[in-house]
Length: 107
Image 1: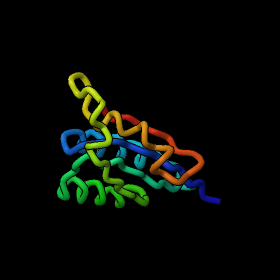
Image 2: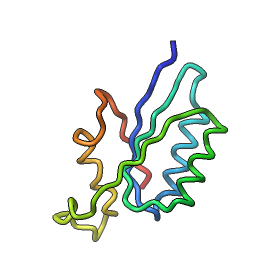
Image 3: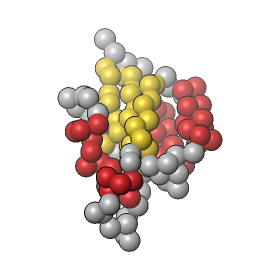
Image 4: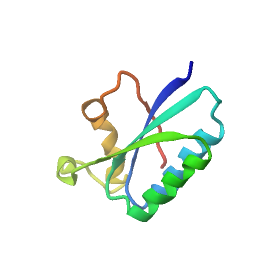
C-alpha cells in the first residue's frame, strides 16, 4: 500500500528556486511506496517557476496544489527580517484540508 505524504511549503517568487530544490530533494530520496501531495502557499510565484517545479514529476510522481495567499491577510506582519511568505505557515490549518501536513521551510 502506498503511503501518501502531504507536504506544505510557503514561498514567493524569490524563494521558488530554493523551494524547488527542497522539493527535488524530497522526491529524489523518496521510497517507491511513497506518494506526495505538495501544497504551496503561493505569494506570487511566476508561471515559469511553476513549470520548472512541475517538470520534477520526472523524478518521482507527485500532485501539487498552489494556494494563493492574499497579501492583505498579512498586513500585521513585519517583513523586515523575514519574507512575508514565511508568515503563510500560520494559515495551514485553515487552508489545507488534511489531518496531517508536514511543513518544510525553504529559507
